[in-house]
Image (cartoon, rainbow, N blue to C red; front, side, top):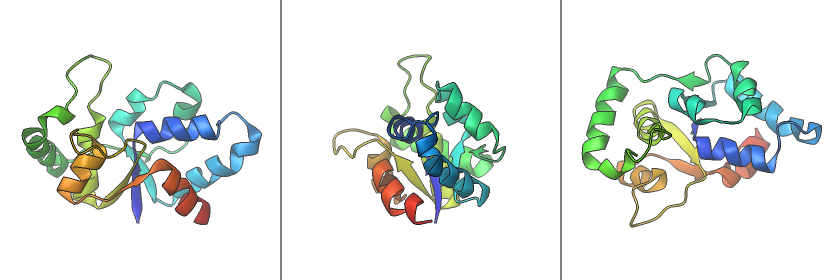
Length: 151
């Protein structure tokens, strides 16, 4: 299984396992190993959403970590925007609309999305759209305990 990680998950992982503390090196070493073995990636817009310099610097060591959309991904984005317009955040310039690209790339390239967002029946978010589009997703904590620590 290949995983595509959302900004919310990277922020939470760093909150729980601070990248600057040596006692958590084992978590970040496993993340690095997963990236090198192409089991863990993210998308180009997540990089711009990350405000923490230490996290950005960590992933600079892995040039292939951030995926760019291809033409099929772009076509899927157009379809998803039509079906789930609330997923596109036009409220402010701080939002990069990474979610729609994350779901598009995951669907087209058979990734499981890692997110800290919670499923909400009445809200268009990553878990809700993933359910409707048959895209696998996993909670951040579950990913750490059931996947990352078992690799």
